[in-house]
Length: 446
Image (cartoon, rainbow, N blue to C red):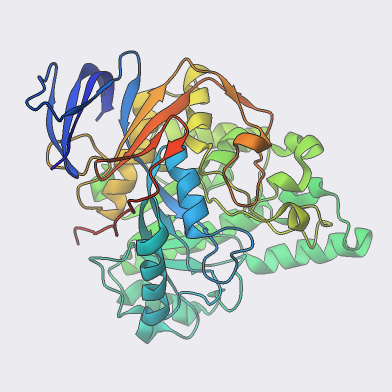
């Protein structure tokens, strides 16, 4: 087996930072100590002096657009961008074309990823109003969870039949992840502004159309149903301060039945940024007010919010430059999410230990992912080296997404990912990729 020794790193793990060495043998971490001596002339040694060594980031919500939407992105291009951004594992959503709403279609996505993904991967099974029997066949050992769109769905994935929802919540023991926006509220708001502006609604109206009310109404209903049925619920991409009141920090994460996620863009942007960014920051749920952003930060830091993710959802420049009603929601984020959060660390908004907790440890705990998310002996060597004193500016020419743009274009980050290991393999090294080795399917302790 191949040996790699990372020396003199500032190791960030389980709330601590300590200087030490990490020895990798094949796919696994086999030793962690203050000083480890090389035991073989063939050991590859990486001097990490002055750099942070963190577990690989686990992004629990991405849209890599394959199959069916590969003019925007695909698993190969976006997973490549992900590892350049320190993300070593991802969980992808079912609203592709065709949608992953049968076991056969779900397995097709796993097969595609096994041939092309730079990072480790899992995919969610998509629930609809009519596929409960198929949903219940989902294997909890090797599928991340069930995804339900309670608003803003594509195709027939809007699950708006309350009896069906009750059956799903009552019938499966798998984690149910939800997109919460009340569709009827959004439709009424949209019609009001279409009457006034036609298709060219000012982008500043987006957080009013996809309002706080729409988010809170849907989130509170989902949480009430989870409490009633005992379902294991994970609420994606909170965007309002009001919603944070629905979650608790009084229960240890391992015992929580209801957990929450926030995305990087809701922590970074506010409605004031629509003036300069326009539809490039059009997401569902919408980026909202400074008060909302502050509330999300507060809930993240006091542990009512458990996970930081991306909701990476690329579209082409041409698509995003259309008028409001035609410009799709979503944007690419996997390459820049960790650098953005490390910028917040530099600004003293969050500690690096807390970043690792929310982006590495907690996704592994919530989804019960086997042997990932921590720097521990016997765990897969999914590891990231970060130089926290290496400024760089996001430009088109250093952006790796297939769509070729980033909402962070023009931003200067002071931390740079220099090395990314996936299953012990150095996949990304200072801008160079190892194209010969692919990631592995995530497995789950359920």
